[in-house]
Image (tube, rainbow, N blue to C red; front, side, top):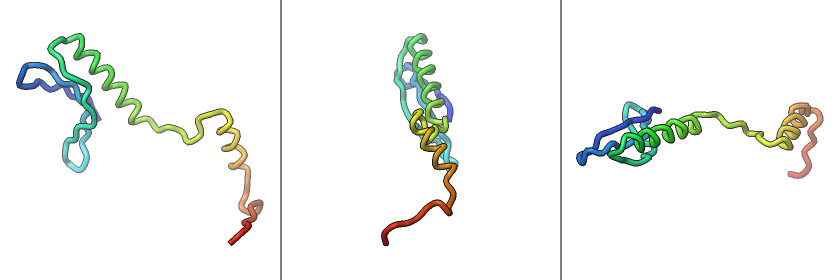
Length: 86
């Protein structure tokens, strides 16, 4: 994924996140368009932050209590598990 700044017919600049999958370009998200370079720069920063958020692998266990559960489950062996019911 990358940030694209595209000039529109009206002369304004549009900021988008683009993804290339299966040989085709796809617009993931559009952040806005403006004539003002300062505003375009702000859109570009927001787009880069969004890319970082989309590409980061988030952990399944985020909270402190969840990490306790993860530790507990990693110590259990198959021989310690008993199924009850059908």
